Image (cartoon, rainbow, N blue to C red; front, side, top):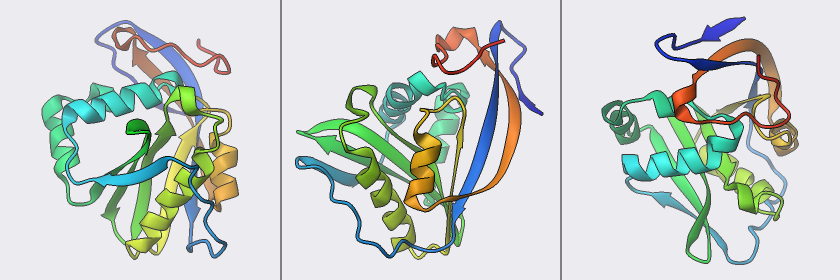
Length: 193
């Protein structure tokens, strides 16, 4: 079991299973249409403040915490990388989700983060938005796309990735010591030690 811990402060211990997935070729079936009124756009530049808002609001319910631990400086360096691109899903000029692609291990493109704001989950956006991410990655010329998810994520995350055409390549059990100062609350389906 891998451990990710920060022993300088009180923390909550969470055991998760991380599933790594990959897709070796672009889908050939027609992409589902985004729901009416939903558009996806690439951000030419993503500020640290906007990224933190996206990351915290989309990922908070699912214990996304690692990027919260990055300093503003380190996060700015990450976001400035040519290999990192951020895409927003918007409905009625309001952000409803985002995804992050990283082509730093070319010709593989990693779907580093993907998610919707909690209030729009289940409204028919996710499947088409995920396909947009896949089509964008392969449209860049990628030969492989990768993604990982864990048991702290939304319970439909893994089934959705499988339905999109990703296949599992390995699973790793990890113990996370998440600093209590982040104020995160584990999702109800996850046991905290």
